[in-house]
Length: 360
Length: 257
Figure 1: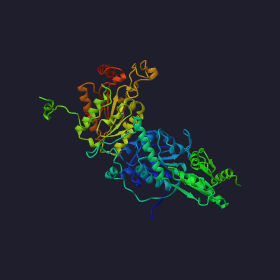
Figure 2: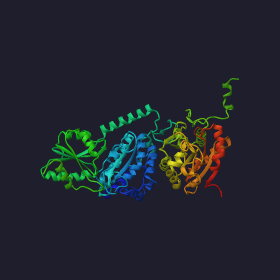
Figure 3: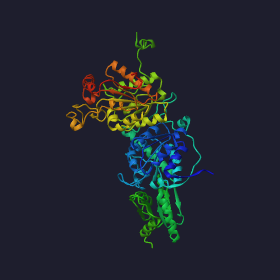
């Protein structure tokens, strides 16, 4: 039996990073995710696995430390919350522009501005659509439990190196702070020097006589060069959309109505589905696990099966735009959200559902 | 006697270091960057550390440093090179890691990054080109622009009331416990270039001693930005830049008291 430990989602990120062979973490304190760095500092992984942990002077600096570490082919990561992610967007754009693998955890809080420290899902547009300047995407994973937080670290690093792209774990204050049982998977050692060079032959590991020197840059002064690079990225994103979409479904087989919700909202919607099913209303739930790539194809299929869909989000309505695009008018798409750190109850969602669908 | 007879090994008294590529530099004639690049390349060759060096290039004219030195390079966002260098060095402590930054990059947009890298005592080398102007973007005011100096954004000369005072960074970071070696050099004459090269070598050597950050400021010319001939720019630098930015070592923790 694998060991199960009660821990916060934020702690799960830290423990998973150590156990999955991360080489470095660079961060800056911000609520509600400070436990990530606090746990790492308490665990002292530099004495066991050799993992580097450093508190930077700002999120601007921590993302650029991630950039430097990623250049050398190391498995590096950072974590922050919404205002900190805004500061990191410059670095994110450079990471995408230099095709560098790394992991970024955003434990979302309410905004805009300094906002609230309570949970929110209002960085969907920022993280899924880019955030920084230029044409790019990050792969975005949406955990819904502390176990997901643990598992997505390893999955995220795999995706980051497979596609040479930043990967964002888009969590929220609930998932970060909630304590749940987490199963510790088998440990993965940090990569050896030889494994690193095999996985990242492009990395700045020092110019050896057997190869030309490596340089990593996002600079492309000539228009044709820049355009060719943009098209290369576009091709990569299309392949990611073909190969990496992940979602889960709950009671969709015979569903006449559908909820679409990610992260903590999907867990609340499950309770609403149970309640409505008990009343004889055939409702199902689709939970996007990857937000980029988005499960557009499956939502399009379901749009032909159901009478209507509702996107349930802790924001003013962001993912709902992608749900509408996927449905392309095939069925009505409604929205219900709460803001400012307020969280809907299953009954509140039920009421909104009945109002939207004119049901008693 | 033809030219091939002259090009015999025994007649060669000077050779371009193989660390430099054959790419024609984009720098303006008279610019100090080319000389400093050569000095860094020679130090790397002489120390035999080509496969152990990682360079970090900035935003500015020297963004293209990676076209000229045959070493592994990372190109940073504007001002962020010390953050990249911090992680690169901590994750690869056996490597020599250096940043190459201009005054806009290091002393304006990147002040937080350089100050905190110094304060943490990162074991990296910082090469700081101070020519008092933004070269690549077309000659705007830099934090190090002298009072009265005309630039694209101070067309009537830098006025302290309007534009603030020149930022003199080296003595500031010399106060920080994390710095090991701070020096200010120039490359406008052969003796000056030799001294600058010795300083760069010392900085690289110090970076492997675990004693903190080494900082080599080069007071440099930007004759295009200053709108002068190369010779006039050198003269102007000696007469105007050196009084504000005097040459010499500012801090050396290993030097006997």
